Length: 167
Image 1 (spheres, rainbow, N blue to C red):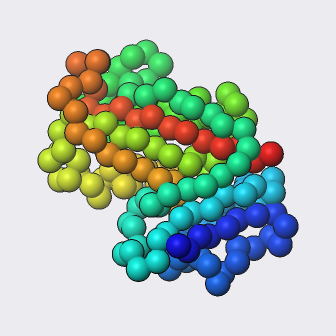
Image 2: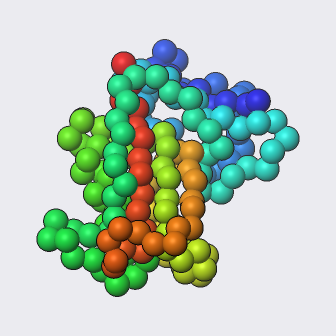
């Protein structure tokens, strides 16, 4: 298993253990270096590099669990498209994280629930752009699940988040 260890001790990751996908797809989260975090992005040897997520993350610190966030604004208004709802749901997650002093780079896990798998596949490029506008190029462990429906009838996506603020 290969792991990219970001820690404040040396200021830089041990590049001998950084998976290729991290070298080309992600920047070192500067907040993690600043606070001396220990976060490892896990990549089993021989596995293909993931695109837009990490296979696993190991971390230590204060844990924040954000409930599933849908893509509505503070007035409970939904935009009409999946990419717009993804962007708003992620902004809602960032707002919850901020209440605990966390930032997007502290995310270690996201679980996505979508009402329409094909809509997600068809709009993946737009969804990815919305993700990067809000979260940047930080790719925690992620899962995506198609569900029969979400509690809010207009919701197309709901995203749960787990974050870790370094000790």
